[in-house]
Image (cartoon, rainbow, N blue to C red; front, side, top):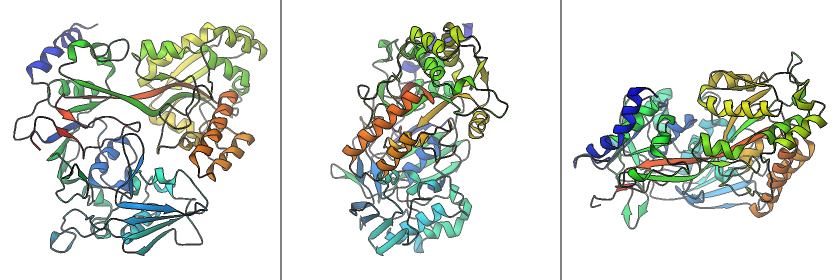
Length: 545
């Protein structure tokens, strides 16, 4: 270990205590401070594609429905709704007290009331090719072609008409893409709406110096209440944009941030014990929250040969199964991840979603003898004749995949890593140029269909990066799409997951966890399985609200 790094780790607890453990001065204390190392590219919900944009738009805008921390769908602008018996028509009844933020686009700068026509406009804008929204997929191919897909029945009644039943639709309507925007602001700003947002959320924009700082302040007319007090509790939010995750964590330790999500690898051993909990010396200064995260880390196989004729051995199911048995997921999570996450010993559906059941969907366990036996059955005893198997990954996962490389070699599988930039790897996966690759699948909405869609054969890449095709799977998938009863859908999901395990187009590695570190006086910052940042309920304990 370099001397300066060692000294830094030794001094961290002293720095944290000396700097006040996250406290702010009285004049600033109700401004919640967090850092976004990835930066923010747009404040327009139509472009809420990645976590950094999602977190900010979730403060500035709102939609028909929302999720609580347990992933239950709750009212938001819609106070109630009905779904027709055939599953094709969703009717929403809107609140009468929701207003857009005060802004110059409205007469006298006074925000006007939200109506059903605003949702018609917002949804049509989302799917308009001229908008070029990455969220257009949520409605494309799903909304009616014979009826208007989006209808304002009256001022406070909005209807959504589908082409075919799609039970996860209510979950999709919690996504930030579907948040309502005013026509007046879009007409005035056009593409510059990205930096001039006008929404209905608990906070409104004050200023945004891109790459430097973003400031939001409390919306005093937000429509939600908690214990008879109007939300939000905070006076505002300050977002910084320090690119280094290690520097971000140091800012938190020095009291310059109120919370961080995740932990840089440089701090894992310093902050966490081997069982993944906060070390004793930090218990009085930091609160650690942990929650299942709807993210399955996996390795994927291309299910057809490459154009150059390579990858033939990976077309053999027994070889893919052998690779699954050769990997020690328990050791991987324990040693390389300090027990952050859970070994993926079931299917692709992660812990935290209905459908996950490690008893009903039995995945692969570490069994090198079984791996060796499968290789012999496949015609590759001790790996002879397999040819070099290249695993494409990126720098962030080198340690993890080096361990996998070593485990595969122990059973005779001649594996080698090829490190490429993340964007290049995604391009290779999309073009069917990576025979064996590292992948990560984060749920877009809280339904197991979000994972099983990866294997439906009519889908291209994304999401079907493996080009998996199985008639039984496809048949079950189509049945599940027409089943509106979640209790009846779950067995269908589990049977599909069992097919994925048997055919082994992927190697599930682990189900991720959300880690949130917060100052002790910050309350209401508990995580959720989507790692969505919800700040309207957050408050500082030692402030008289």
